[in-house]
Amino acid sequence: MRKDYQVILDFIPPGSKILDIGCSDGELINLLSQKGVSCQGVEIDQEKVVKCLEKGLDVIQGDINHIVDNFPHNQFDFCILTQTIQTVQKPDILLNELKKIGKNIIVSFSNSAHIGKITKFLFSGSFNSLLKKSTNDQWFDTYNIHPCSIKDFQILALSLNLQILSTYDLDNLKKFKNSQIPSNLFCKDVLFHLVNEQ
Amino acid sequence: MQLAGVKTAKAFPQAVIIRAITMRTITANTEYPGYIITCQEDLLLDSGKKINNFKIAYQTYGKLNDQKDNAILICHALTGDQFPAEQSPITKKNGWWDLMIGPNKPIDTNKHFVICSNVLGGCVGTTGPNDINPQTRKIYGSDFPTITIRDMVRVQKILIDELKISKLHSVIGGSMGAMQVLQWAATYPEHTKSIICIAGSLKHSAQNIAFDEAGRQSIMLDPSWHGGRYIENNTKPENGLSVARMIAHITYLSEKAFQNKFGRNLQEKKDLSFGFDIDFQVESYLRYQGRSFVDRFDANSYLYMTRAMDYFDVSDEIIANKEKIIENRVRFLVLSFTSDWLFPTKESREIVSLLNSIGSNVSFAEVVSERGHDSFLLDEPQFFKISEGFLKGIK
Image (cartoon, each protein chain N blue to C red):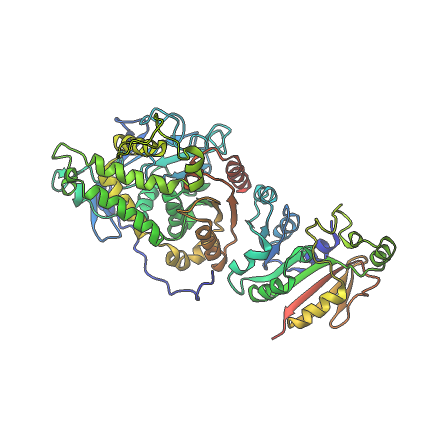
């Protein structure tokens, strides 16, 4: 199981209502549903939507960049973005919308400032090295249009008045509380738990 | 769409059936295949009027299992009937949803017991304006009470009760059928596990009411309509009904569908006639659509059913019954087609937003098709795949 899924699964209490944005074929919401979490998925790819439907999951086909403002406010306990934020056209606008529709926001992504990546970048001289490992994307043809670092994301969250409740270094499943965050240089994959600062 | 808070619960009239004199019998339909339920009772309608004694004509496909939990109710659209599958006894062609319903088809009759009834106000066996009013012993004609989508659904509920089915596997319909499906969710959420709402809307838009009105005026301005008493006058408002169908048919297609099918091609001629005879293929096609429609459909039914669609506005009732909908965990699939401008995707998304706002999870997909509103009746493999996938996931 993906480590961000593992953290989320341990983390979200049964009976909660969650929105998984970019839920793919529904692996995470399927696991959460089995735990008694009420799940709503959003996915742009119709083939993946069909896979979710076959599993009995509730998924709305839609483009993350446009769909979120269709959701009524304060509907979800958690809005979840796993390995998705880097694909969004305007991450700041999306996070602002999520603030309105959910109480908590969970975001996981690969840290583009990780030493492995920047070393590769340094020696290759190509931005392709910053893209997701799992794809053969080129910088000009990729969904991952917004690679970001832990530091970048922290700054964005603060500027949007989102409070960082906790963060996880997903490589060793280490939890950081309050203002502590994993190392921008040495943490490969990270998960942020944010709430709206009132 | 952001909903301005939850509106206060309105009282929605429930079906009042005077049980003391209730007598319902199921018999074989003598005119068409299928069955007729004869109900000797009063049906109180949304309008406050009553229909004394009424019939429900329906057809079934597949077998009801012992647990009675494999039944799917199909709700037909404006000009549909109770014969969606197999060969239609009326047109002698494949039923209007034969691509969707049958053995090993998306709605698989090897697994499911499929029920479809002619709607209240229809003209294929269920009580409608061309039946005899038992009180006056004359044909109802324009004396038939105005009916609503909710009235239609009440009658379907009576049918389901008579078949002793307490929970349907799904209620499925497109267009006017989608309205009935949403009404089922609002009024009887405890009686279905799921809903598939195809090319539908929470309410009829102003533009759609406008098209309906143009169609109705066309019928009522035909001198052969005789104030709705054309049967007694041994005639039919064929011209009016045919023009109504032509107008409506344009709304069921798309600009691209017309362009692809006909372009500006001329009909069996090389030059323009410089007159008002048929020059273009599209004119010939529309006239044919109009003409063939009058053979199978009744003008008064057309008036009553389009009115029922105009009156449809189900949001408040869904909000008022949200606890029941959530409690019963009704699962929703909302589907739209990219080129449908009669019930555009935007309106399906409004259904999704409303359901989300009452706390219900929902599934939605938009199928890419160039063929307009009618796509739901056509061979659209992706549409079938999505529907089949959803039905498979209903536990």
